[in-house]
Image (cartoon, rainbow, N blue to C red; front, side, top):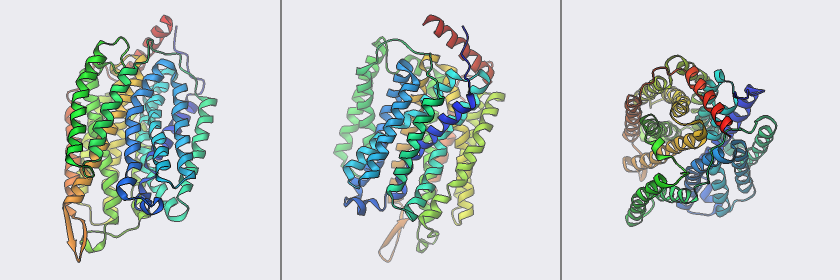
Length: 481
């Protein structure tokens, strides 16, 4: 029995990519609003920061859980649940200025990040073999593309309209996404058997929450609280791993995850996520630094957002290019080139912080490398995992990017808060603080390039082998079903 070809592969890709971009945008649209939210919600800044933290937590927890659920109960069905979560979250944020309601809404929005790995898995199952690698390259890149376009779009809304408007827009586009999925995207026949691992899900959620809370609240919470959170994390991980290795249908197949091809790809994803997020965080703030610092440009929030737009355009243009490189040389080679390009971008950034064009050029080079890297990661994962575990495996890979971003956010905030200059009672990060961030992020990209060398070389890596393998796996699975 052969794979059922998709009737409209381009429409399926367009619908799923639209979902990925919108979900990614929903994660970042609140960032330009953060300075205003303490006044809007009548809450301290430390409480307002939960609007970022809670999205990070729910995204990290639900991405692998919904990925596994998609493999077991239907990827399209779970995709619709994730999109509905984003719509509910957007509605809550659109109708209220109460901080508690906003935090709950952002939690719902964070859970929708699972849309991207689910979309990748649907593309693997439904598209003709020759379209799989180019399509998943575009789908994977939507995480970066949405972030690159989301912040500039949000800055324009914040500057020229009521802040609720961006959530109403997100709500409307989310409903459109649901309609498009219902009309265009088929439900995959590829399923994995067994029961959903509830104990494993609770264990994974517990140590992720403890770890990410400790990471994201490093500068806000007491040392004793952080020590407790890290200690609980360290205790939970081996217990959870022991259980997962002994249960019949584990949430995460640790034996597969320990394969060098999967392990080093996931560690590379963590470092790539770190390097990507440092670019976004530093660019937006650097452009707005006051002129009295001697290096600051004193630009508006709108200008800072627009500085990220060229990077978003580069990501859109380079995703198909990444797929062509993977077709010709394999995704391992592509990821290595991408990591080196990101490192080169940070070298550029070290020497181009005195003017807007220079900042934009450096940031765009890093974004270009990110696009190529994000496009190659799911192809590497699909080389190494069974077709029935695609959503869960890509969910774990997306989780590693999220963890990298969380660690990056803490390190960037710590460096900028502690390496400062002062004048007439005013305090701001020193230029050397930004350069430290660029060095750290560049080293993360170099380390990712080093990990690529540890990924086993396949005798034939181009996409035709991957997709041919996929067809065989799907055929075998459907026959068994």
